[in-house]
Image (cartoon, rainbow, N blue to C red):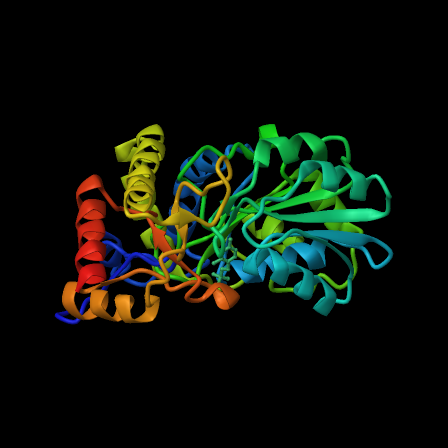
Length: 361
Ligand SMILES: *Cc1c(COP(=O)(O)O)cnc(C)c1O
């Protein structure tokens, strides 16, 4: 690592291990070669296990927004509407994107810091005419973890409404069983919970969603679900993928299954509760209500009115690490601490000790 290495405890991108970087140094291969197909096919079983699905897992060379936009373009018909559930920066943006894709978007907004209400979803969908619903499991900007199982139960009453779920900052930190929950598109990105460099996103699409896509015009090419499915049949991607990142993903899957998926979930819970203890004992408050707090990051209310920017500057200069100073309109009013990726009890305690030290100085 370079001498100027500043360790990231921001909620993405997160710290990338040396093992992961080394995995990216494999010799280049043709993306239509037998070697690539073996790489692609080889990682499927583990990806399907993590996704909780029997469906194939597609690899998109884009950040998560590509697949988020793609989901809208593939699943919402011109005459249909999309219901955008909105509770923070990322989920709010989906409404904007739906409109930019020329779709009839309906906003279901709650105040930032609050979770999405299953009852309100049910009321809205009961009005009829909806083709899809967008939903963010873990709203990274506010640290709110929405109640996915409860909302999935509501969605089962509306099988014609495609259930699009973003798990960018929660994937692999807790069980998200796609098939059991009846999710139609489950998507995640590389640079957050998976602790890979940015540039790759992963997603799986239900059979009924693929059927829907067939009847939707204007899907484009790059994110056309049917192109992904067609290429998947021969262990390939529609266009040249980020092969180095797929090697990194293979290496990360090795790490995850060596640790054990349940042990990984437990480690995230334990690391998260170290941060929660720190918040409680230092007189800070949580931005998200109890019962709806993310397990992979913590959004802390700056009720002590600390100069967050100056604090983070000291963290960077004196401790070579950073946390996040609040997203968008929450800048300075909150700060966010990530426990995603490869963090251990030891590294989390080191980071929290640095927070204390830089807070006092
Ligand atoms: C970061 C994030 C995104 C956007 O990811 P990009 O990689 O920037 O496209 C979407 N949703 C959530 C929940 C995120 O945390």
